[in-house]
Length: 229
Image 1 (cartoon, one colour):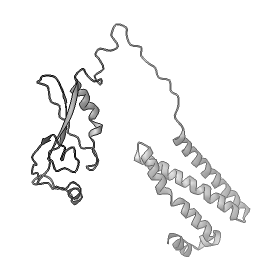
Image 2 (cartoon, helix red, strand yellow; image 1 turned 45 degrees about the vertical axis):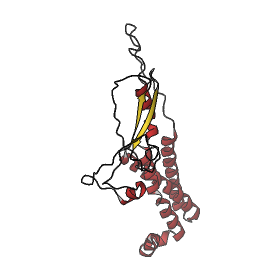
Image 3 (cartoon, one colour; image 1 turned 135 degrees about the horizontal axis):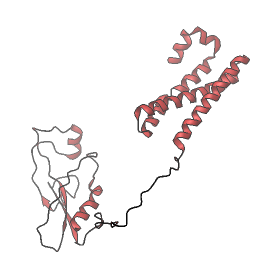
């Protein structure tokens, strides 16, 4: 539709270019949003990604359009101009791709040598497991779709009514088979075994993930570490 509109309204373009050249030029520039999206995802700045994506798509359009026009034009002057535009576009594409494909530069970093008066490790590595043996259990409503919080739950917990606070979407209600008036209390407990307490309790409430994707494995290492210490 865009090509037909330009072709019907612009008499000057019809005189200088063929319909195939206009189609190729516009078709090449249509990929501009794809380049912008990709560069915006790679770069840290959306504005920089937009500019680089626009420059890359423009360079690609000049390169393809210039080559095509150089081949199809009969005028020597137009051939020279098209060839120059093609070279400019090719250089632009090469420079931008080089910028993204290089591994970076070797930069010399001045490192301060620590004083020998102070020990290098003041404490033991806190990320290592301790000396206690540990185990885990799960608690849940007993009717959850995940068996660890359903029929295999070690401790059955009552549901809670949060209908006055939140509203679950129809998608979540269909997936989890419950609504906001009967929300389950599900959790996993890592604890030391063969030792007498009392022990401190650490609560981890997490939710920065899709509700349909289990995330316990991402916190398992931390539960083991704390329970063993």
